[in-house]
Length: 229
Image (cartoon, rainbow, N blue to C red; front, side):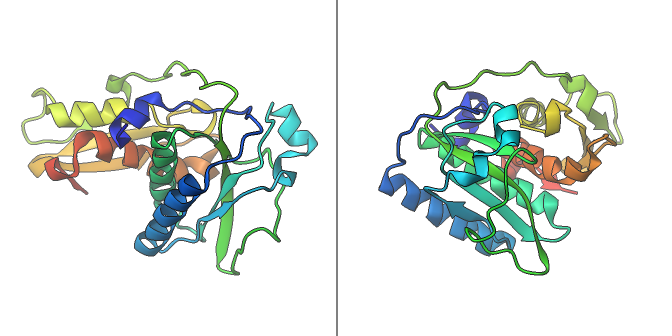
């Protein structure tokens, strides 16, 4: 499975089997996390064999169970979009390795002795990780492609390029806060693409969501076909 296939195969999973993740898969994920941290100037950390974060009432209310592995999504304060982009890259790689995941923003308890958060950093959320009790289900998209695109080309009105349509379709499969999909992709001349967030009641998570959808768009559209504006 490649990243593009993982976009459509991955679904959020909240219940997990009590099955350890193999050492070789942990190593591959850690290597990718190290690469992403270096490239994106982030501080993402893999936490294993730690069940306390999802042992409280909020987690049970959110129907989470069996979680003892997760990825702590940590970045410099204000670098949320960058974190979403690289964090989703790790999530899709986990899917390629046969693992299941779920982005979790509120329904977990912080465990400050299990990861390091510097004074100029923030723990925005965690990603549950492991072998799901099921593979999850795809939630219906609230938006269509037409709802999340704008055409700013000089010859506006022409058909969108195939690569752009592929990217938008993949972006609609991206996990966003309560599946709001508050984003828009703008196509400019010279194959320049702008990704913008729209207002949402959960506006604090909109920048993180934007990074996730940008990664989906880029994987499906192909980096060689466009340039971010």
